[in-house]
Length: 120
Length: 246
Image (cartoon, rainbow over all chains, first blue to last red; front, side, top):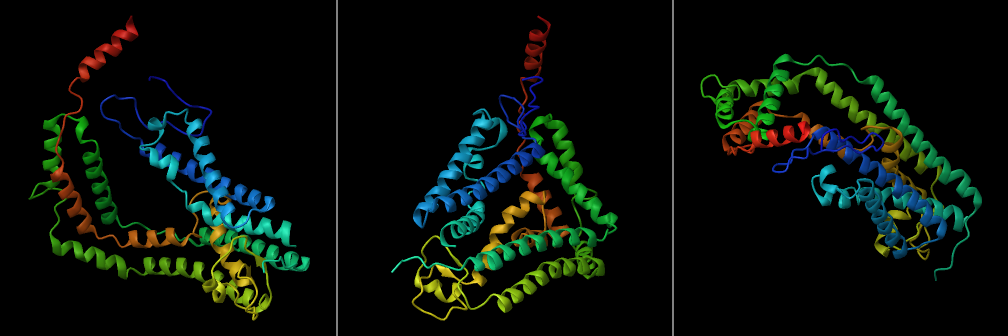
């Protein structure tokens, strides 16, 4: 509990390890949310390019998007060493937040890569 | 029916890529221009004081359970006391502050500048796209859409038998507009003015009404039930110290 610091990771502990009432450091929480947002955006762009190159069309592409988002969630959870509650205030944040935000970027880069590779 | 059209490589070279590159560059340009044009506004001390009072009251409300009951109550009285409590503002006086804020020329100029810097590049780019890149198929979107989207997406193309997946450059422009937001947030770092939803949230938060928020804070403070969350605090401290010493 004392002196527990994550110097290498970019996520910061946001709760003090008080047993009764958890308090959250707002600044660290915000930083963690930003990390999630950036990770998801980046992964959706990369996922879009991959989907385009592999030639997914229609429904398969969206399934691939959800797959990429799930992989991102699992990666984030693993990075938080599975102690989700000491970095975020609820499960929903790390799993569902920013899900739909990356969709437009995914579609853009999917279309782009698909056209470049397959149509032209 | 769904045989693939083979499109000219020149379209890819001279339409798709330049359009995306131009939109990215315009976004970056707009970000730097808005940074340069942001005029420093002298904050009104009264408004700042009220804002800080609200922040204090909010902190008190959030951390109420960590201070002993008596001190919490004394603090609460300090805030919501009827005569000279900080959160209690007579109604007439507060309205003036809001009216003054809105007619303040600096603030109006700022908002207008922000709006313009957003709308003008979009309009110009859209006009440019329409002028130069209309009348041909620009891209194929990888997923099928219904016929209703045809008029929206295939604007320059006058054949009605072409698959709806083949879209004109206008829709490529819109696709870029929405999809590059994520890219901008990655390369431009923190909040940048390319996101419309963010901008609208900022604008709506701007017209904040001092008296209403003070009243809301006062009510919130009155509602709080104090629950002393650290009754065994001394025992815990003793246990930790014992562990350290032994």
